[in-house]
Image (cartoon, rainbow, N blue to C red; front, top):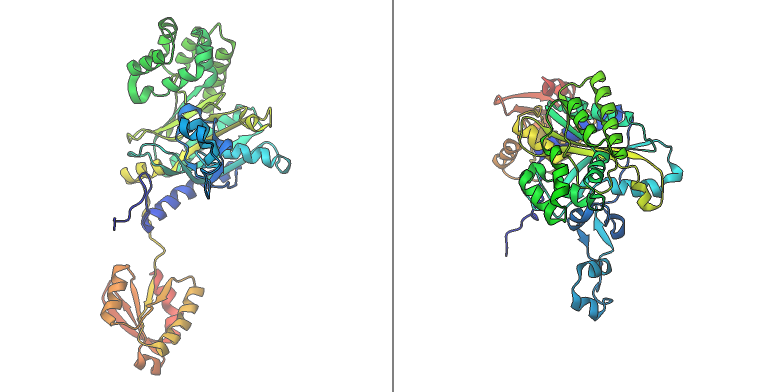
Length: 458
């Protein structure tokens, strides 16, 4: 029989790891609440058609499809089976898919519940998502996203607020970060200037890989996608912009002077930057990244990507404005903007930098040894009273050797052991043993209940 294992790109978590992950979730959710966001949850899987076509060509390939139950091939025609065309077969055998992110399910939620919501609607969501990606350090097939979104407002103050939110979360976690920002309108303007409006998606998908594969390979990919040398020559200045945030914006504004949408993108970025500077940031730095594209088709305005400056691990957060996302589900003219925190990568950063606070698991504090049923019945009464005092305790389940029970206490780092055998039962006493110091004292059961809280806390 093969040794059991987890699927590639997934993990088990020990108690200590779970406590650390909960620390991150708690920190993020506290900031979300401070900024006026309320929690919702959506199902782990959505209808196939809800997800497909929303993430671009590459994103769609990474969606985990769920096979229909039963004889899912029975209704497929022989012709479709013989042609083996994925785009024809898949919708027929898979009606559901695991969610790829939390944003598209949120858009579906807003449309479905629009009559129950008050706009602008601010929600946060901390749940797992799944992507059929190639597993590597910091990249998993099952991972958590921590999202906050606002729908029903086109105000750029929302973007300013999200930058502040990023800064507060990462400051609370002790991480120094760069918040990279760009605007899809600038990218649309560049496509307009280069006369490749029909290649906008090809342009942004290739450009988004710049940090991973470098300029030379990005240019080659653009050529492969049908972008001409003449167009590439017009785009070349964006690869080598120099200077501070506002200086780069000025240079870009000159390049985009003939594109109305491009100039609008520059003005939006200037607004966000200047107001962020006025408010100030604690440990984060706002950085203009003119080649940042985020290869998701639904972004329409400002886009964000956050990187930890002390660890080489890719982005630990991202997001942007998606003014027409709900339009794909029939609800037009409802602007939205949102950001996401990558819990798993944040965990790796905190672990590598030793930034986790010392976490003490809520483990058993007191173990009652098991001698026999009569003694155990008395122990259970004491245990009930201790639990009412919020003291974690348990009875060893079986009257095995004392040595084995003590080994259990030692292995599970239980510091206190209660010994209540036949002699103690007759005298209404018990022995309390401190496994750290090796000391032991005999006290009455009444004294034990009165003093145990003080003993454990000290």
